[in-house]
Length: 360
Image (cartoon, rainbow, N blue to C red; front, top):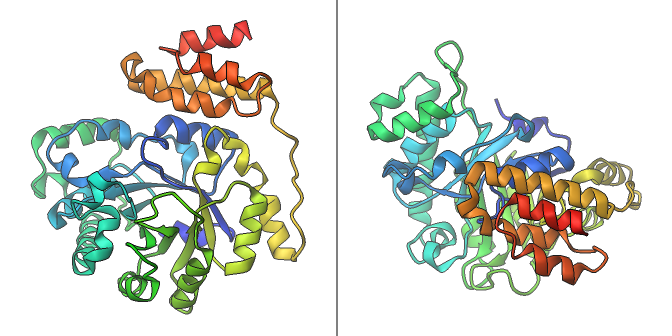
């Protein structure tokens, strides 16, 4: 079942962001913005297969996030094969392979955007993951693929009693990447991925060398659209999208099948509220006019509290400092925003956040 073709075009989804789009962030975005799809933070296949327990939280998701994709990264084909089984077993709607992360500790190991320099390995990883999906759908059990007993136990604990004996289905595989390594390499790199027939290809309009600096190159993304024309492979653009007006302009200019919003959704899950208006404007060839009123400070603080409580429930008070960046983002546009941020970035738990809100 390929959910990609069931979503009204253009697809307007939440981009995966390391250290940002954890289960709490995605849940809040799904409840208050309703993006067309969500992806987990990228998760190391090698870490999962070695028994790391963090993936239990990394792969946690709520039903309201559907369609929801598990995003994975790494460089070991056998691990991709095994983790594809895990992703299917956990009931995800799709599997996305990260070939775009520019972080040095990822790319220097030949993972993420580092794969742009190693297309042969990139192809091998895609094929290993697809084979894992197909073998799982054909009935292969997790017990038979060499996963460690503790990994099996964790997966079983996350399945909530799901059983797949009656119905197993293949899920679509997609790839997220960049326009190049140290220069735009669309004409060399993208055909390698298209030849592997992913359901969708998400392209960030910067090179690895750029990281997140400078402007995203949407002309390069438009070239990806040209290369994919006639293949049936969807192309989604990513980079510098801060509003639905930006979405309308980029889709109209490049012809992408959809977009992923990343930094524009930080502290602003409401950015997705106007997605239907954006789709209608594109369908009719009209200008986009904001349909919903500005989000009030009162609503922002309510959602800020909801996010804080869910985050603490998932990760515990010890990890709460990782919530502080979200708190600072929510304060954008507040009356006295600088004072709000100064207090929020000192909060040690959700109770302290609630105290700050009550104190005003």
